[in-house]
Image 1 (cartoon, helix red, strand yellow):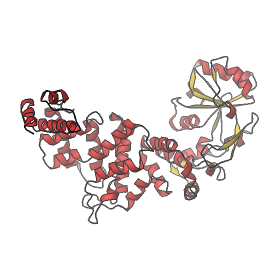
Image 2 (cartoon, one colour; image 1 turned 90 degrees about the vertical axis):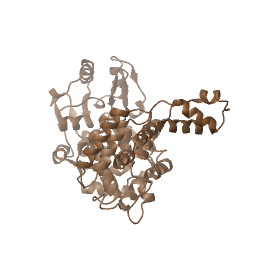
Image 3 (tube, helix red, strand yellow; image 1 turned 30 degrees about the horizontal axis):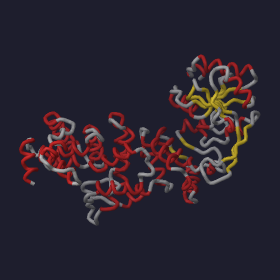
Image 4 (cartoon, rainbow, N blue to C red; image 1 turned 180 degrees about the vertical axis):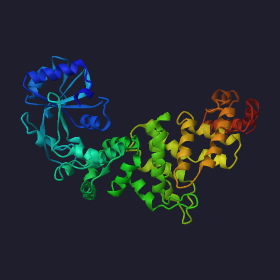
Length: 451
């Protein structure tokens, strides 16, 4: 296994120096797991554990190779400015002292027993330790066996519940690795949720774990787990109680449809201008149906209702304003293209859509979410999709892919003697609408003057 790791000479020299000064170097966590799963790693997050040295001794060694960053020194963690993806940590024990995710009392112990050190890890597959000098994997909790079984299992049922974030981490690992979750571990997670332990997680932590689920190859695995243990977002949880017309949606409720769409979106998200926004859009595109669906299974204006729910429940979770705008635009417009094609609408409808998404979502992204939405059901839609593709290609070729620039602007209104007021934007919107209907600038200005 040793030959599979490709460390730069700087890192190799540090390892050698630590060894010569009486320390033992281990790779721990994801880098060991991923090497066993994939046969290679990308070195974006390298966790190194050093035994046999004090923090000061380790700091002295590292300082020979660059500027030591001591942000985590009190926790026994050091970094080098020229190795930003590497964490050098000393073994430690953690004792829970509060309700929040980070409320732990940490004790650094350079001589800590290897097995005790590994026992604080969340999952058996993350508790593997690779010893650099001996080329040996220390596997105290059958992590390799669980890797072979494609199973996620907690290391210690007493320690695992101490960190509520582990429920969400478990979900993203399940999605990223496409592993099943061991029943006892799932049971503990359900108990953690029922006790309200996840209520103290920050929005930032929740958002980051959801991002990892959504950017995985199989988001439905982690999302289904969160639904099972009752840890899913409330606006998604209600979707399983929202039924759809079976002639349109043989898959049944909106939740079933949503996870089908989300998995399809994962297959094409990297082709979009905003993969993360696209995946959030796929996950949330039908959240409005819970608010408006009738007894007959109709869901009028569920796209607008979806934006309303987003503004009420999700704005605080998703901090980036640009990302919010992208997601809300996907929710609002996810039906527009298919409805346009189905109804044989004229060019005006296409131009209106281009204007609505202008500078936020590309027409290509909207086409992809439309197709995912259409295909995310237990129904053969290939004829509809083929017709949709044909019409959209024709529209894009003949009419373009970006919104038309307005012929009339504020200066034109001033030249007409119209003073700037709250009516200005309404007049400009009306002028643009006339433009989309085929009027030239001269006729638009005449109509404005007459109005």
